[in-house]
Image (tube, rainbow, N blue to C red):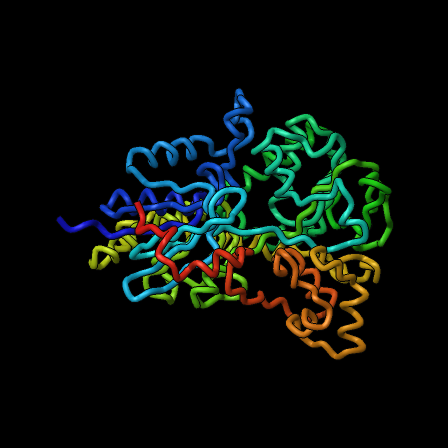
Length: 459
């Protein structure tokens, strides 16, 4: 009996789970590979069972959707490989091979061979530097949310949530509902920008209602919402004690005492694996066709990797990608009419989030507040002054040259965290750096790749 085709799905968030269930229901053997301790990704992140959370659903919305996805994993017998940190996907004559490091130590690698790969790698936060942003007590908004959802821990008692983007609202309300005193939500966006995009935004009333719900919760918690403001400095000796915010129009400043600053300036797609495979990018995102196929044969992409748009869009894209992959791997022509509802959802939400993204923007001239002694690359401790010197005195005109002259982006994160900030300070275009590997890999693992041990053909 011929074995069914095998699809490896990288990422167990909304897009990956939707794709896995759609493909598995149509006769494809599916393996989901994810770095987390369990399925759900960042959006459906769950507390560890040992914590004994009584009502984990209180930390989430769309809980019923998550329950359906979780139940579907068992119904369709999808194989889930957790704590597998994918560092490379190889194209081979007979298919593709997914390489992943195992466990928290990540000293051993395994390989999963498949006929097709679906990239549902999600996104990561963009944080622009400012004086004091390396103080203990300053963390990303997503980091604060992860602490709350995954560990049931508040990052502090008195918090400011700042930056720009739709992530700020759920983070602020989540912290406030869990018992933190969120004294201010500081957003650099101008409310008039949303008014100018009313035509596109009102077509998605459920999203507008969701945002209004968050705003109402903040009102109940007496959180001050400061639009057209931005954090320009964090203060403290051993840890955060206060932040200074400025009005981007009048330039008046306010000092706000707090012990926690959760900051985010939006999200960027995770494209390292796609880039390593040779997939074409559209700006910062993976380019896909109407079936969510990349231009690399046998490779699909869905969710935030193809453009930031939230869980509902990720679910729609994942469903389309899973159905397309199932048909293509069975050597049949897919019928787009069979996923027409998901296509309509995808079209609406892409339009909505394109309008939303254009309304959220970092403040103009934010680099003016970044002093020369501000560290902009934490891994290599490169300051803004060093970056400016590379541009003004040494003639650097692009990110690669700045990196060669200053080592900014050469550390552990390989520029994933500092690239937007360094690009802004240098006045260069933000061109994502090409990385052969999606994460740091021990040299011993690389040396062993030609050996037969430590590989698997999939479950």
